[in-house]
Image 1 (cartoon, rainbow, N blue to C red):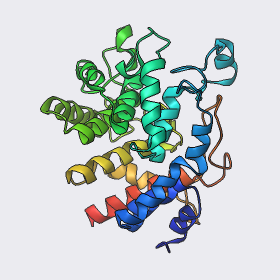
Image 2 (cartoon, one colour):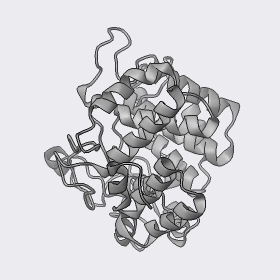
Image 3 (spheres, one colour):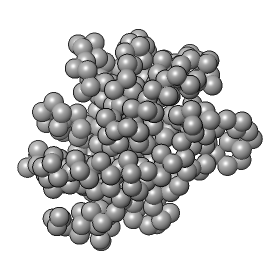
Image 4 (tube, rainbow, N blue to C red):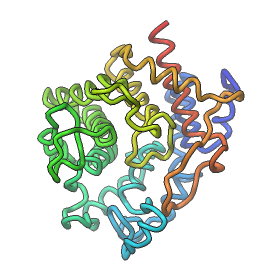
Length: 324
């Protein structure tokens, strides 16, 4: 299928996880076309590669959040590991593994029966205590079709006074963080799409959105200063981390789902994102999170990032269509 520009054509030559989303989000291909491409995520490319690393009991690396037997000294020396079950499930969701596929159904069942959180031994689909973890687990469970209502209810009770969320709440924080808030927002959105949600879910999502919008997605509310320079440098895989592209892609998805136009307060972040496009119409890898991974999906620092490019192109398409 020919693309409308070189960057889109480039994406169509890559992994099925990218191709089916480029077909749907950039080319408006009919579902009959992209669904067959999406099905390949289970059997080809990065999706199949991740599935090949699955343990017999349904977990990855023998753990929920960290690999079995992981030495904390390695975390301090080399960075957080990303090979355990929770991060792999999130990656498979972002690849678009079909929830009705044999691999997905088997995984959801096995993980529910065998996987326990290291923090307190809770069953995986009951969630943990940190909002970032629970936000991603809510998104993964809702997407893959298992009951995660208990996690949703917990997150509704974890809203901070300023409207967002913070993993440090359990340690006394009363201020929200950008990272915790985007993790929870993505989870609530996926849950609302899957179940229809409730007024309480919609209200919590609106409060979290307001937290980000009031700050232009990247500024401190009190001073207007950039809260963290890394917020302006798109990252993928983002894991638990926050950046403006992750937030913009959330607002794009919510806007498409519910027919809401882009908020003007997204404009500055959109302009920064647009300015980072290179002469070939792509976005480059500018940094990576250290730590164990099953494999990389780009050529490293300075190379074009297919995932950042896909997400940026669909954000800009949505913005330009809705604002011009």
